[in-house]
Image (cartoon, rainbow, N blue to C red; front, side, top):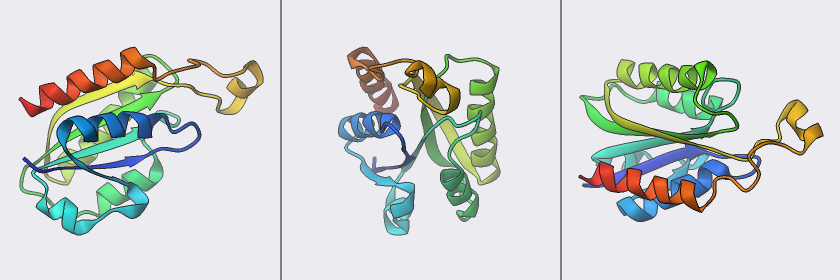
Length: 152
């Protein structure tokens, strides 16, 4: 199965680290959302969408790109994210919001993955941030396991 992963990653490149592990383990094509390639998208059987979580939402650029795509006929997809907080209401809101967009666009969301990541946004910068050295090796191993689960 051909897989194409589109992601948004800024600040500390946390999501990019996760995207690269997924791409390596899924033999996937990988692009930042700014470099979206329609031909790769069209040819792929599965699309991965990834972003950092910003104020309980995926990155605006990835949201806009996804909303602009043609309606799909149950094309398979998965989502992944990195965040400075553990799974809670705001985090679940980000994933839930993005899954609704995918469903509206006609995608079949197979699964989702997230891990903690280094975050120095806003007031957190004053305190040196949270989750230093994340994603760490354990997070990368869990990412690999998620990819292997998707393969099956």
